[in-house]
Every structure is written in C-alpha cells, then in structure tokens.
Length: 248
Figure 1 (tube, helix red, strand yellow):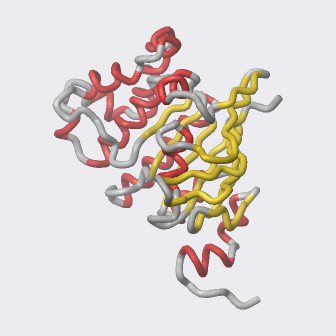
Figure 2 (tube, rainbow, N blue to C red):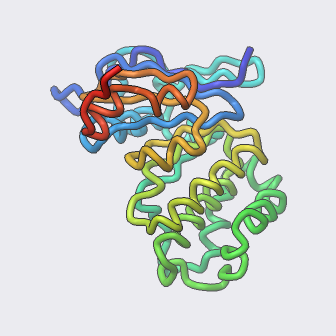
C-alpha cells in the first residue's frame, strides 16, 4: 500500500452553504502537490475539512500509511494532528512575544516528535541558517519572510508525515517567495514528506510542484499528473491567469 492521503468526493460547507462540491485529490509520499485557485474558491475550506475543523457532509478522507488505512472523516482535530498531518497556516500565526526557539519547541508537542526533537531541530537550522542565528530573537520582530521560515520550522518540529502549507507566498517579497519555495522543496526531499500546498502564485508554485489541481467554485476543474500540464493548460490561462485562450 502506497503512503498517501486521499480525499474522495468531499462535500463540505458552513450551515446551509455548500462550499466543496465533490472534491477528490490525493497526496503521495515524497511529492509536492499544489492546489491552485483564487480567493473564494474553496482552498481554505478544504484545509479546514482535512483537519476536522469543518464538517465533511459527504465523501471520505483517508490516510494510508505503513499498510494501515485510517478514516479521518470523523476524527477530532487533535487526533488527526497526532497522526502526523501538520499545517503551516496562512499568515504564519507565530507567538510574537516568544523567541524563535520557543516557537520551535512548541511545535514539538506530539509525543512522537519529542523523541526526534534534536534531529528535526538540526534539520531546521541546516535548511534555515537565519533561523538558527535569530533563535533568541522575538519572533514578532522578524520580517515576514523570516517569520515564514520559522513557521515552516515549527511545523517540521512536529515531525510531520504530511505537511499542508496554506498560501506560503502571501505578503512576502519576491526574494523571500523564491527562498521559501526552495526551502519547502528541500524539506520534502530530506524527509520524504507528502506536501499539499495551496497557492495563488502560479509561477512560483510550479517551480517545486510534482503534480497539481485547479479548484474553482468548490470543484476540481483540472487535474495535472505532471506539473508541465499546468503550465500548458488553457484552464490556467483563461480562468486563473486571465490571459485568454491561446490559439492552437
């Protein structure tokens, strides 16, 4: 059995308002999957549903890992996280008054993560030397790009199997967007992570993605089994980038 997270025909929303209309996708070990879509198309609702924060009204979410198949659909958020599904939230959401190092230690709250704390901390400091250099600094005094690095490290300290990264480029300079994407790619390769990344920055996202999906109005409208298919997609050109259909 391949290690993967499978979302099958997911329907979810808020009260009588349905946001996801039969969404299906999967994320496999050692690959980065990008979920592309502009604001208001269901990316955040899908993430909330993965973590049990929004109720799944139809469909299923399964984690297949180490020859086990685990239904996440009705599990509590804490139990889902304890299985190794870890979120890097949009906007980073660090504890601004705590030091960088204190924020990282808070990431290692899972019992399994505490057993490999030093290994994960060493990897954080290897991938992000600036995080090591600023480890005694208040997190809130850092730039947005530096805080994003801390947020990624905090997630790594949780010893994830699957890393879900919500809009990592938001509010960052082009230089820090590039550095952040490169770091995500390195972390995936070093730890053989499964990575699901929601993004609006199409050009940066496809630099590190292996596969991708496009979501519109709560529906997956395009599935790319190879990242090159995204770059050549008329769906991207018309509905996402607004460039108009390219003639054959």
